[in-house]
Image (tube, rainbow, N blue to C red; front, side, top):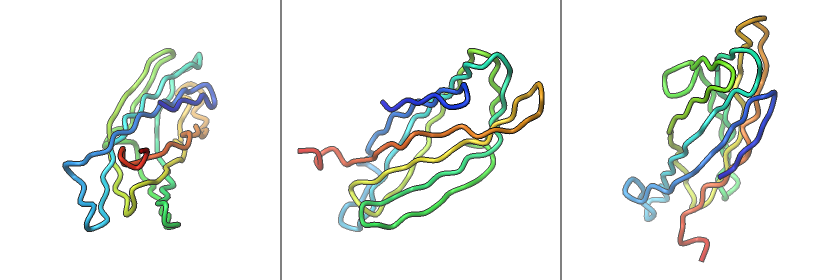
Length: 128
């Protein structure tokens, strides 16, 4: 598991290769990732947007950006956490993702960015 605290918000990431949804002969590799967001601030926060940078090991990269995560904009009071699972498809057996969340302090209405630490997605047999 990868974990990082940025702006008082801890982001933890676990990844899982999805062999049942992958087709290696067509260069289609599906990964799931579970993200836990923990608010260590003394104020309530709201996740407004996400911005991802996705890298395949063949040098290709793409950006994904949008409102909320998995269709919601979670609000977290101090010491609360929110967890969700999403997925990413790659054209290679190895890749990496990183990015940031745009958050809002619900008291002051000021917006700030929380870094999502880089994490790798690797087909298990590539590690042998």
